[in-house]
Length: 513
Ligand SMILES: Cc1cc2nc3c(=O)[nH]c(=O)nc-3n(C[C@H](O)[C@H](O)[C@H](O)COP(=O)(O)OP(=O)(O)OC[C@H]3O[C@@H](n4cnc5c(N)ncnc54)[C@H](O)[C@@H]3O)c2cc1C
Image 1 (cartoon, rainbow, N blue to C red):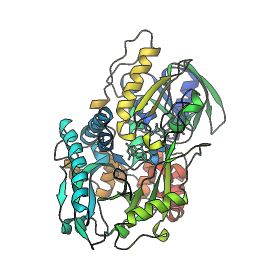
Image 2 (image 1 turned 30 degrees about the horizontal axis):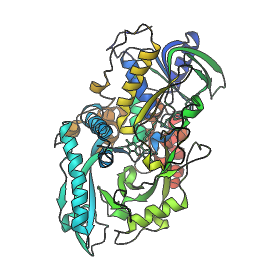
Image 3 (image 1 turned 180 degrees about the vertical axis):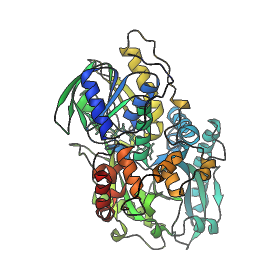
Image 4 (image 1 turned 90 degrees about the vertical axis):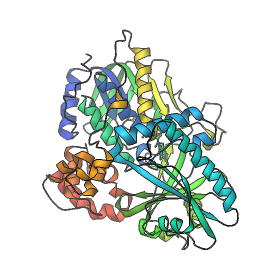
């Protein structure tokens, strides 16, 4: 059953035809090494880790890749600064080390350095500058400790008033004394990272099956339902890994989570004077909480983030509340020359953090719950990997597969993880991206694969400059099965209602082809 490690004999393309073929093959031979439940970043990371070790791996996702929390993040590749501030050195180090791998080897094409600018106003600018400067300095020490070079992420430092206004032109000039600038990693898009990891896993032979719900799960078997045809399949596995995020308690009722909602607003970047930096604004009354802006695709900027307990039934798609929208606007407006209003908010999105608690600790504030990941085993042997964050998915996956092998594979003999050295599909050194023969916009989204995208046949374009070729690539190579997959997770045009409407015909045409 175990395959030779190191070969990459399979296509990385995901599409409806492959899904049908692989579901049929699973029906014929329903015994696998690893069954992974959940197609968010944790699940696809596990599938890649396992398949690249040579294990026969099947991943099932009840909706689409990145349908859950993994598409609602702030898209930051954290260096662990906030964990340093709370004395969690282990988790801070893990974050910085994984950021280093993502930005230098695993996905340099999907990441970039992001300047974070905190404007400083009198009075109190000296004290605040010193406090934030100390934090940035500690974070930078960690960057250097894990070996991330200056060419990838520069060191932090104070900047003058003019430079602050140049980098963040929308801030209030009155009382401005200067700013502090730090650097962190930014993902081009979180859902695209999930798809890239899933395709890389598929290249090692993993079956990535979307629209397949794990309806009954045990430590060595599961009943899967194809939600398109309704047919059911009984699969046996040496190990079953649940990577179901906030839904982990549905698979193993002993996993206790206290989800926390994080909300972002979507605003035209023009409203921030076209700024390409992350404007960082202290939350009034707090020394450690900040609201920040993140430049995003399609000429938009996200403003985040809240941290609010989200008890009660789990929605498939969480919604922002009015009080969260007001809190984000009120905070960012403390530094805006021309305050933002509700009319500037063209969309909102919210996600649920899968924060671990225990059954008797439901009174705890969600911001206090640990962001560390956990690996748990149910009474009948289902291994759950939960918590953590997007930045550390690779490490979570490695730990999860190690645990599953140690607990469930009696004979052992499985290779060690190799994902530290494994570039994702399209990976290409950032400093050589100008050598890729395609439009910079495509290079930014597809890395070394951009010329293949551009070579597809033409058709009606979608909104915001998204081409027909990109839509077709989504259908033929990135596993989009319907218009919503294309709008909401491959292109993210679905975030803004007007863009979705303007793009639906083009998306339908991509499927008609
Ligand atoms: C608002 C917000 C901002 C964040 N910002 C950042 C950030 O900037 N940087 C960072 O590193 N991290 C960030 N995080 C954390 C990060 O987004 C999450 O830790 C991560 O996305 C969780 O991924 P996951 O795969 O574990 O869960 P999910 O992405 O939720 O995936 C779970 C999947 O399992 C599927 N599923 C559930 N049950 C079943 C079943 N029975 N059968 C089949 N499929 C099933 C679901 O459909 C879902 O797709 C943020 C989180 C939030 C909420």
